[in-house]
Length: 193
Figure 1: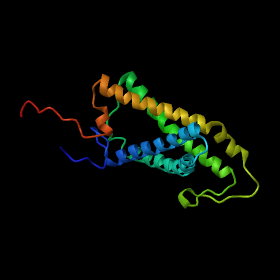
Figure 2: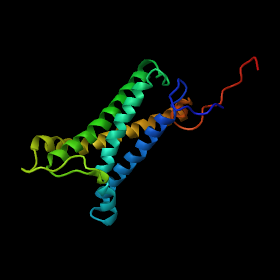
Figure 3: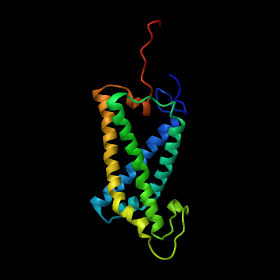
């Protein structure tokens, strides 16, 4: 079996794409688990620990989304082909919606953080200083109105994404999962062998 390439191939995603995909999946799981704990438990040291990292993790996710998008464009011609027909178009629309929300949700929060007038330094790295004059409502209002709703919509799309992986694996019995996880499927020997 050939070693997994750094670059994507028509058969499967490479090491970089996989690391970005699964790393982001882990960070999103942390983000959504923290918010679920906040809703279910309320004020608690565990909640403070998990939610205390929310802004920093969200900033990291935005950076990874941008890196993943750039990497995907650089590998566009190498990547596994999409299904044709209606299923393929629906999958493409679903992925576009995922990417759009993965960009919009943290961008809104970052805009709100800047508009709050407070300094913002995730993980101790100063991104922008605070300023006098209080919050800038046109920057804070969009996130106040839509960040949470769009984040939960993103979670619903992620759940749909996972459900479709299960459909591909269990019902359609194809190797879509192997493109992003695990080893390449074993190929039957050619008749000449």
